[in-house]
Structures are given as structure tokens and as C-alpha cells.
Length: 198
Image (cartoon, rainbow, N blue to C red):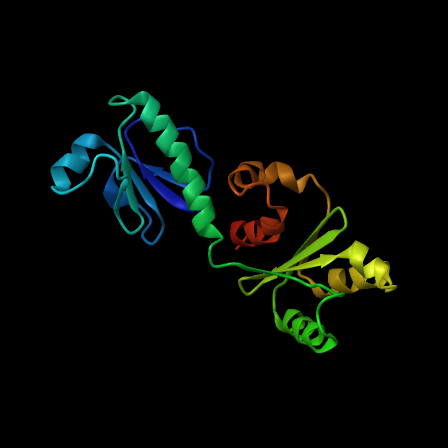
């Protein structure tokens, strides 16, 4: 899945999830787009501000590498970070706090998790993150242990109810660039896996 477009005639070093094209006609609609050409912007936008890189909703610009190499590199990196952050803006995170939440609230959350059709889970250290329906649920296995519950039993139930259960840190290699741009927030790994494998 592509998360953004970059329109450029220059070579640009980005990850595979960025759609790099030479012409604006070749972009994927509905995702953020960066046009790298001051000449194009000045020709097509009369009232642009040179310091405002946003031309419209999801349309940004920067100088071409041949126009301003230093600004080009910096703006491309900023744009890719923005595209990654935009990717997760509709995802809600719910930490299941077994100590603070009322038992009725916990039951509602469990019912919601069970109602999600294709769940993807990721275990990192003593946390399990479950993704589905634009929601990520966090389960702290240390807290489960503290509450006197069977950690292995709960982990096995999560595994059996999920379509995919990721648990080795080797998965970080696949999402390394995304993680850097998302402030190393590992809770998004099941979501990134879901969009990459849809």
C-alpha cells in the first residue's frame, strides 16, 4: 500500500510505500502529495507563500533538488514523516487498565475485541497490542500477572482469536523506517502489518 506521492524528476531515496512519479497525472488520489518544483508552483499558483509548503489539503510543494538541494532533502524527509503520522491519525489506542477500569468496562472492551473480524496482534516484551476496526488495544501482561490472572492462558486466548499473532522483534526490521517516523511507537506495528498485507 502506498501512503503518499512524490512528484519529481530527481532521484529520491524513500521507502517502497511512497509512490514516486514524474508527472502529476500519475499520482494516487486521496493520499498526501509532494510536488518538487518551484517552477511548477509559481506557474500554477499565483497566491502561494514561499514559506508555506502546503498548497491545498494533501498537496505540498518543495524546491527541486536542482533548485535548492538542502531544502529538497529536508522537505522530503519532513513530508514522509507527515505522511506516516497522517496514516495513524484515525487510529484510536485503548490501554486496558485492569486496575483502574470498572469490571463492566473491561467486559465491554473484551466484547468489542471479540466482535472484530480480522484481528492482528503483536507481542513486544510484556505488552500485547491488538488491532482491528481502526482500534488498537494494549494489554500489559505484567499487570495481568499482578492481578493474579493466568498470563499464559490469556496470551494463548489472544493468539487463538487473532488472524495473525506477531511476536518476534525481527518484525521491527520490516517497519524500521515507519517506526522512526512514528517516534518508535511499537503499538502501531499490527496496524502497519494490516495495511501492508491487505
